[in-house]
Amino acid sequence: MRAITYVLRRKQIFPRLLRFSMRKAFIIVAMSLAIEPPSTLLGQHTALPVYPGDVIELRMQSEPDMSGEYSVSPLGVAVFPRLGEIQASKYTAETLQALLVEQYRRYLQDPSIDVIVRRRVRIGGAVRNRGYFNLDPDMTMWETLAIAGGPSPQGQDEVWVFRDGKIITTILGGPTLIEDSPIQSGDRLFVTWASAVPERGWISRNANALGAVLGGAAAVTIALIR
Image (tube, rainbow, N blue to C red; front, side, top):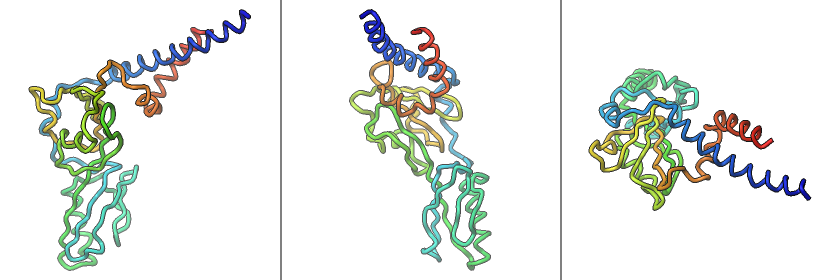
């Protein structure tokens, strides 16, 4: 009977300790990144390179059949009609446009080409529609959150922006209007929950990102139980 009771207690204690460890791990990951003031996001919209995951919209007035949207691979490569593979990540939208005009002169006379790079961002946390979005480069943070349906009833006004290994925190409608600043490729916007810890579903969906930290935390938890 004592053995059965011991096993049952282990089954009850372990999930609680594991959830506690996962919550601590999330906080540790956030604290390990550099936290920057909101003003660092302003004025960083020029000369941005094309990133993996972006979508390049090509508009060719003389050749509408060659117009379209072309995804950038994880290696930064995009495949264009007639030209084949181009290392798009080496260029900004402006320099890529100049390159394409030069390259298409081999096939077309005076080609007129417009290039729009739709930036890939991820929106998570307490929003109505979480996920990845490819958005126009001139869209602001606020417009990006609106695409995701805005904060959910469980959310609050604090937003974390993960960019280039740093976290920028802001309050929507605060003195620094970060929501009016433009997005960048690779941005991750996280609307915080009303409670101090994100819902369990968010952590489980991001288990890969937290895997290294959680693995160590789980190992310590198991050792304590034993």
